[in-house]
Amino acid sequence: MDTKTNPIKLMFSLFFLCLYLNIPISLAAGTITANQSISGGETTVSAGGVFKLGFFKPGNSSKFYIGIWYKQVSQQTIVWVANREQPVFDRFSSLLKISDGNLVLYNESNTPIWSTDVASNITLGSSTRAILLDDGNLVLRPESGSSQPLWQSFDHPTHTFLPGSKIGFNRVTKQTQMLTSWTNLEDPSPGQFSLELDPTSNSEQVHWFALDWA
Image 1: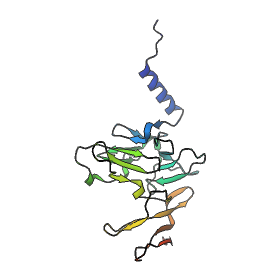
Image 2: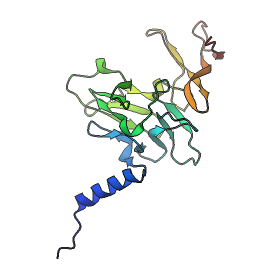
Image 3: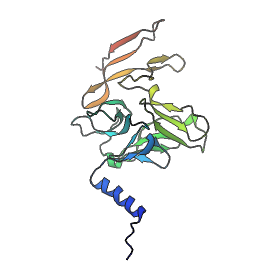
Image 4: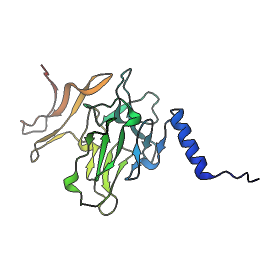
């Protein structure tokens, strides 16, 4: 009688057991490639184990978002949110994956609701990968060639300023990089306050602004 265990069968058995028991699964080295995706309770962790990327649900909300948080902090502390204005309601039917060179989030209806949107900078047929770094920066890079990021979350801060991220105003593209508060503890959509550089000033002045949504 052969008592050896087939390693492939064992791997799939453990995978489906994790799904059944809703045990989070982490992708190695903080990398998402064309052959990988994040769904349900899956996460990816930066190489040094500092930050984690995956779906999260704020408070008692029934909505899910893709975010970055500290791995070693016991109370989940979100530092960046991708789809803060377009949540998903079923994380197990939603996917964050590489599609046509971009990192794209598809909701439960298989509709793209968030993307790095840098298709114009990607050579047709080339492949990319997304990497979560130990400083909390999520970068999209070519699989080969230049190591310069095609896109990075530090250029698109949401509500938390991390060392290396940017607050500023691009006078060429007319784009403003700012921090914007959450609406409340259970809703990460843009709230009433922002921290940004004053584009009307010749000096670099940082101001708090109360936004009037009425």
